[in-house]
Amino acid sequence: MADEQPERTRPTSVLEDPSAQAVAKTYADAFLNAAAGVGIEAALEEFASLLEDVLGKYPDFEAVLLSGIVTRDEKIGLIDRVIAPFGSELFTNFLRVLAKHDRLELLPLILQESQLGHEARTGRRRVQVTSAQPLSATAQQKIQERLTQSLPFQPIVEAKTDSALLGGLVIQVGDTVFDGSLRTRLKQLRNRLRERSLHEIQSGRDRFSHSEGN
Image (tube, rainbow, N blue to C red; front, side, top):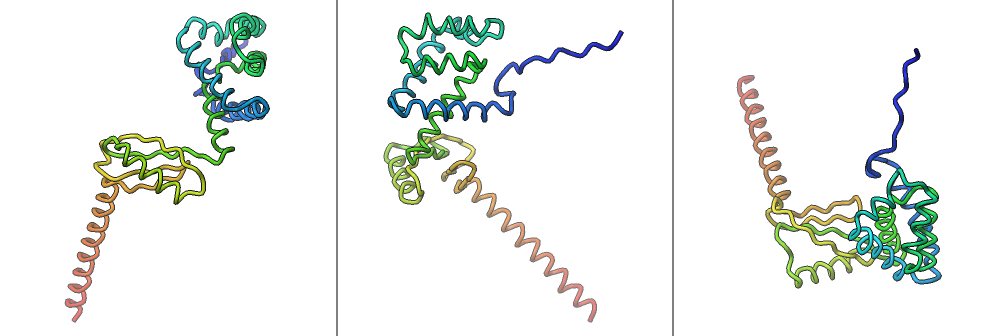
């Protein structure tokens, strides 16, 4: 009997799918384009409310809506009965499209990409500012002002803490990191001292070798 091939199953999490982010961005762009005529801010608020106030508070409903056992038609029927009476036509139709293409599990990623896409379209970008200790409101305001003056877009500051930094700040804009932390400065100082010591040792060896040659 021929060897049976193992049945291929879908990833247990969308995070395991390397294409999930790209797919989510495609749906997010479509959502933003559709929402442009009715109000993007309101559409994003409704989107976030679904995840937080409906799926977040009713895990049983979320489990059914995202289940791989429930058919697409059953999910669309569930959307029509539970969400359509309270949701906008735009958002309800968007959920139907996701259900039809079996993409409802991407909802959190699509919301994230939609928010980032809207910020980019309005000249804003998120900037992560990491410090050793929580920043005061005054310090955050000063950082916001400095970043606004320095960057070619309106920064949205996201403050984080990391006690390992010891002091200073690490600022990340997209994939670019500006590391001004005390930890990094100490590391750079150690490297310079090490290079200086190695240079002095090598210079001493060279002088000693030169003396022996004479």
